[in-house]
Length: 182
Image (tube, rainbow, N blue to C red; front, side, top):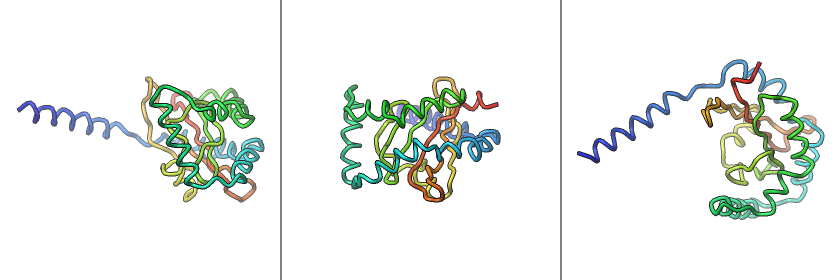
């Protein structure tokens, strides 16, 4: 009987969580397709992405870094690359963008293979290439997650292409505090 009650409780929590997921409000959609999409063409960001893309890291190399990244995070440690990606010129530019827009809580940028190029905070992993926020940008242009509640904040991840003119060279994911969007 206890197993049935536990299963029912877990199922109820799962269904309640699913029912709470909402699409991004129209004000965030509008912001994503204008102001935030424009951030993907920033010269410092584009230059940094092109530099990383030019290094020619293979997917196997990116996945190896990803494994090291995840293992370090689980152990409560950092690998040197983590600090580098939060302090390089691109990361400094991302922090300036955050300072200019009070509704942005985090930004990270990837190259065309999905490996991080720069970021304002530690991401859960290094390789974003297997996630919708990366894949959908290459298919559709701008991608928005559903609203997620984290630390009492209503957040949406907005992913936009990093573009050099018409050439799509990477992605930028911008975490937006919905309640701070004017």
